[in-house]
Length: 243
Image (cartoon, rainbow, N blue to C red; front, side, top):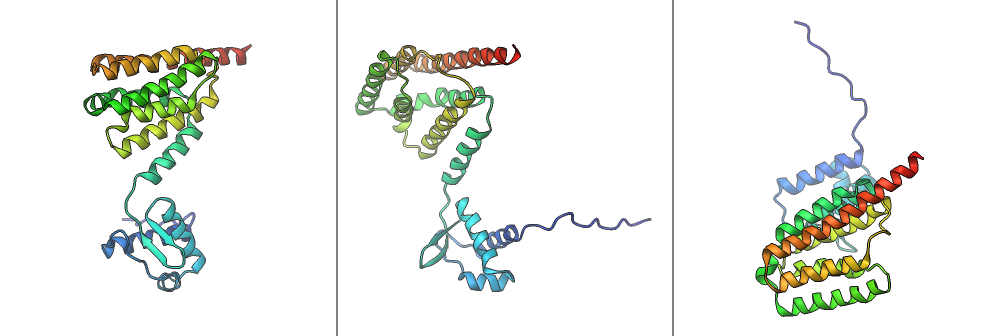
């Protein structure tokens, strides 16, 4: 039986990546909880047999994903787990990579239609009043023929704020940001601001009436309208390129 030789590595792993893996292992092996300190940078460099610069790069990389935090003048510590870095990276990735804006709409539509029922159970009069005030600002701008992205952003946060679910609110924010970043790929100037205002007013009516079927239907129709405008604009853009 012929034993095949091990193929040589095409490329050695980057040193700071190896440092990251070693630091992760150190945290796991020692069962370090949030707030636990790591050894000083110089000591880590000696133990790992690498330069302090390599240790510094590895620490910065782990800070970017929320594993470590540096307290200036004090040291490096294990950071409490948070979805924040993941969600921030998700917003960046979606906004920069999605050429098909419908993908963002599908996610937003599914998330909000699916979770509006919980809002109807817990929303109070103060939240509804704030929703009405936001919709009124939309109306004023719509009558001037203006779009109202900030009011729209606030509206969708308000709609789910009462659920007191921070991860949900961050996801809504992520997909709102991704939608407006991805909107650069498609001309949305044909969106009718008056119709958009009416859509939001109808959603508030259904929420205030605690009518789940109507709330879901009006949210769904709102996103269906946006999808139609996007599809029409993309068809126009494609036709223009072909001619």
